[in-house]
Amino acid sequence: MKKSLRITGVLMALLMLVSCREKAEEPTKVLESHGVLLRVGSVEVTEADLDHELREHHGGRRDPATREQALDALAGRAQFAQAALDAGLDADPVMRAEITRLLSSRLREADLFPRLKEAASGKIPEERLGEIYDEQRELFQSEEKRQVAVL
Image 1 (cartoon, rainbow, N blue to C red):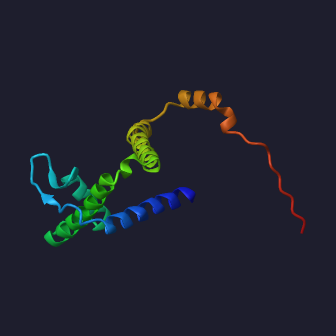
Image 2 (cartoon, rainbow, N blue to C red; image 1 turned 60 degrees about the vertical axis):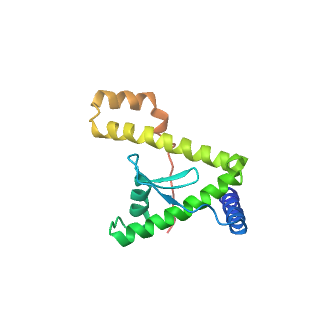
Image 3 (cartoon, rainbow, N blue to C red; image 1 turned 120 degrees about the vertical axis):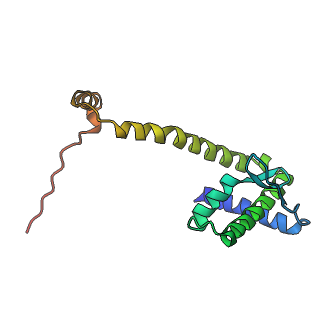
């Protein structure tokens, strides 16, 4: 709870900071072979970012009006992100810790999920299951519990 309040506080401070500053650099639309759709300072919005935005917030719709709406949202976030970078918030210890936590969590997901999927797709021989059970018997056992009721 405290962590989410801190993050919310940092984001609110960022919004206040941005609203007090001169208008951030306008997004520059760039169509490159690298899939960069627009750039605000050093912040780039790519085709992959647009695909994610459309999936997460627009139900996967890809009509021109929805794409334009999603690009506008991404451009606004890119402006906020560039304003935060300009303000030096990327050096803030809270932000650095949160970014590190998110990156390490995502790496674990990227590494763990394929391994779990691979393990789940293959059949484990009975002998191996017996070995696993014997090695970790304490995980599969618990003390007996009895419950008595009187009518």
